[in-house]
Length: 148
Image (cartoon, rainbow, N blue to C red; front, side, top):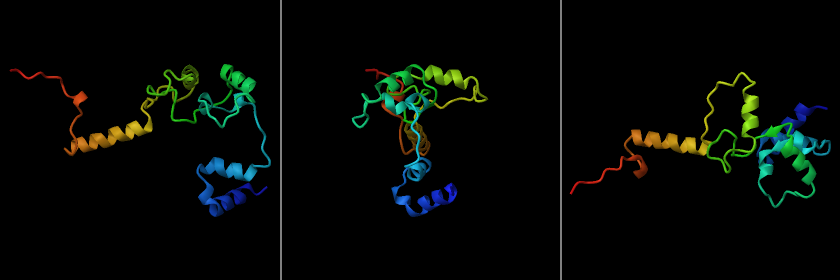
């Protein structure tokens, strides 16, 4: 089917329409040859938030089935089950994530539990403090009351 050549052609000639390289190219390439799976086989955590574009009534049964017994979960949003600062804590699939993670070779690898933007802000703040370009914030000072 010359998928590689067609994919490269799409990348070269439609780069201005591509945001998510792999997914957008596949969507453009296979738009008329797709198979739609039930939601439980491709459940995305973004489905957990109400979206005015999403037809919840049309997929209500599939959605309930996916929530009760998901087969594949895509952690597609910025809320990850390992973050302690997610929109909801604990994440609805937190236990499942850790259950299956424990079965992998990454079981004992430390997971960074701060979202990427917070890690970047902390990193930049640390550098600025080391360069004496930023002071510690008030919450980071020891509370000392002046003596009269």
